[in-house]
Every structure is written in structure tokens, then in C-alpha cells.
Length: 542
Image (cartoon, rainbow, N blue to C red; front, top):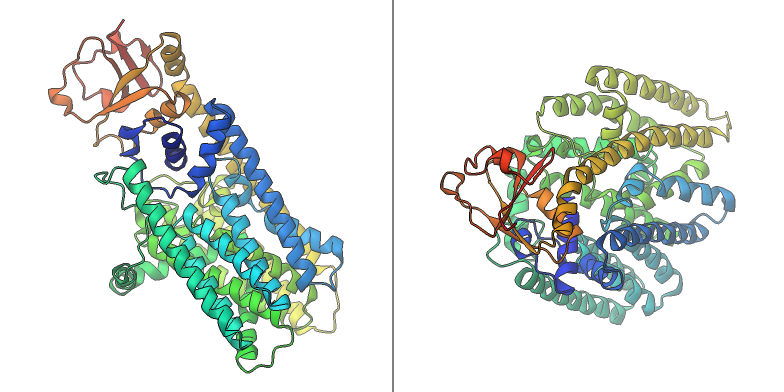
């Protein structure tokens, strides 16, 4: 994917490859994950093998995340059976998003691991008051900031929580140390960002401002202005993200979200019964809410792409540990849990039809991997009205059940959370396999489209070619980037010359997209050495 090329760009640069022209047509991606990929590309020079090892690493990251959640559960849910805690962790980790992200060389599984580990260090610090846990958590947040700009907000929030805990316990030196360490991380993060922009991305690139978040006050003002000037768009954007989160979590996140308000009051009034659990819950709820709000702002003009309204990739890593706490509370809570679930169901019953209606009105394509839950439902039932009817019917049935259980508190039906979990897992399975099959088909089509071109380049020992890029036809030269990755030593020059003035040159190999080719009248289809469904290759060197 285009994003993947952005991460591998740093890896290619550090391994001596020069993909300059194509990098200039790629949005900026932070270098942290690229550093890891550069090691893989150094150990495994074959790009396909390095890519497959990156996928294996993603699975490893998910396993370690699973282990960390189990450790959190041991501390906050000691009275829940160990096997049940393991089941809760499994259901929380194996949501469609994490499984789908792990199939690409994306940093999302690593981001999830770092966030969960940072959350784990908060509990350890509260229980043991050792400064080493601050260092461990800060390091996790630092790596998070080097991987993606969204990590900056997690870092700031982590510092605020740690400082608050220290001040409450009169550990002022620890609080000062946390702030100082946070400032050092910010400075080092800025240095890494500037290095990447200067060396990997040219400062003249038109895409260097994409995917970047500045630390200055102007950026904060711009975020606030976006909400003030487009309040209706922001509310709809937030509604889409919130509804997707409720569906993705099986509505169990409502339990910790509502409880966090009570816990916050208890901590302020120093009436906390289980401080570690309550602070952890507050941390998870605030970080999830903050990232969802920021994502809603970043996708404010959601009508530009069909999936933007329910885009979750920037914040769904916060959902996993929050879901785990939600499942634990569902099993453990005695009072009001069904009322809280009913609140979430009512909210979704109201918002879901409106969200789906808005999505149906947007004419562009849908990115299923970044909004996999809604995307999976749309793949399962393509008719929008029918989908709304089916989802609302299931939600109405659940709402009726929760209200009956709430008004009959004497009914102690202990197996209800497990029935709920079973239903949730079943729906997740349908969504995952629908989206996974769709993405596998797309991947196969992409590889088939360039296979003949790749074989021709390798068989004829071609070291350089010109890619004819027409900005009116292509947003990003995706095929050229895929070709570049599979042939890292190949020099691809991106030619932006106007098609009307283009003339062929001897001893030059040209590659052009099928749609763009229509504008390059100097290139005749019959002269193409390779013609595929998406590309033409003209070899004037042989």
C-alpha cells in the first residue's frame, strides 16, 4: 500500500537505495518503524522475504500485547478465574482490525504493544512507586512518538497522569523527573523528525506536511478553529467514530467509560477503593476519547472519502485494553451494568442509520482495512437499507434483553456475559473473513498487474526507467512504488512533463499507467513491449 512504501522509504534510504523521485510523491511517515524495517532489509536483502518477516514480527507484537494484557488482568481482576481472564484477553486482542493490520507492514501492532505496555507501567508504578517504571513507560511513549505523530498525544497524557500520581503521593522529585524526561523525549523526537524530512523526504516535497503534527501553539489553534468553523461536520465525524467504536467493542466499553466519571470523583475526594484500577480506567478512557476526538478532527471533511466518517486506524489501538477492562467489568459488576449497556445500544440505534446514510451518499471508494468493522458489515450486506434493518433488529433484541435484566435485578444469570461474548465473536468472524478475502483479492490483483513488468525488467537487466506521471490521472504512482519495492536497486525517474509536449528518447525505458497512457499520444499501444491490465512498458533501449 502507499502507506507501506512510506515506511519502507526510510528502510531503503538507510540501506543505500535511492528512491528519491517516488518518495517525493509519498506522504511523510515518521522514521521509527522504518528503522526497524531497515534492519530487516539489511538482514534479508530480498524485499519479498523482508516483507514476510515484517508480517511475522507483527504476529510477535500481538503475542506480546496479549501477554501484557494478561499481566494487567492479574493485577486488576485477581478474583476472576484465570481461564476467563485469558478468554477476555483473546477476545479483546483478536478484533478484525488487529488481525487485518498484522497482515501488512504497518506499525499498528507495535503501536498497540507500546500503548498497552505504557498502561501496564502505570499500574506497576502505583503499586510499587519505583522510578524505573516511569522510565519504562516513557521509553514506550518515546518509541510510539517516533513511529507515528499520534503518539505525541499519548506521551503528553502519560506525563500528566504520572505527574498527577506523584503529586498525590508527595513525590515531587519524581514529578519533576517525569517532566524533564518528557521534554528530552520531545526534543529528540523533533530532531528525528527533522532528520527524516531533510534526508529521506526532500524539504521541497509537496507531501512533507502530511501526517505531521507540530508542537507549536499554531497547530493547536488550527485544531480548535477546525471545530469552531465546521461544528456540524465535526459532530457528524465524531458520531461516526463513536458508533464504530461501540459496534467494534460489542458495547462493553460503555461500562468503563461511565465508571470513569465516578472513579475520577472518588480519586479527587480521596475515597478510592482500588486506586490502581481506577486510575488505569481513567487513563484508558481519556486516551481513547482524546484520540477519537483528534481523529474526528483529522477526518473533518469526511465526505472526501467514503470510509473517513468511520475511520478508526488512528485510535483503535486505544480500544483493545479498554475493551478488556469492559469485559472484566461485565463479568464482575453486579449493579447497573445492563443499564450502561442499554445506554450504548440506544445511542447506536439512533446514530447508526444516520451514519450509514451519510456513507451511502459519498461516491468515492471505501478503504476497508482502515474502517474494517463497518466495511465488513457493508461487504456482508451490500444493500444499505437492508444492512441498517438487520443491525437495528439485532440491537433492538439486545436492548430488550438488557432492560429486562436491569429491571429484574434478582435474576442472577451468570452466563449472560459469555453468551454476549459468543455473539460478539461470531459477528467479528464474519467481518474479519469478509474484509480479509477482499484485501487478499486486491493484493493478488496488484501483484498480477505488475508481474509481467517485473519479469521483463529482471530478464532484460534493466537498471533505470522513466515513469510517466500525469497528476490529473493519478494521485500517487502506486504501481511504480510496488515495482520499486520489489526491485530496490532499480532507478525510477518520475517524469512530470506535459503529455502534449512529450517525445520519446532513444535508449530509454518508459513505464506508464493505462489511464495516463491515453494522453501520451507519442506512445503507440502496438509498440509496447509489455502490456498488462494496468501498465504499459516501452523499451527503446533494446
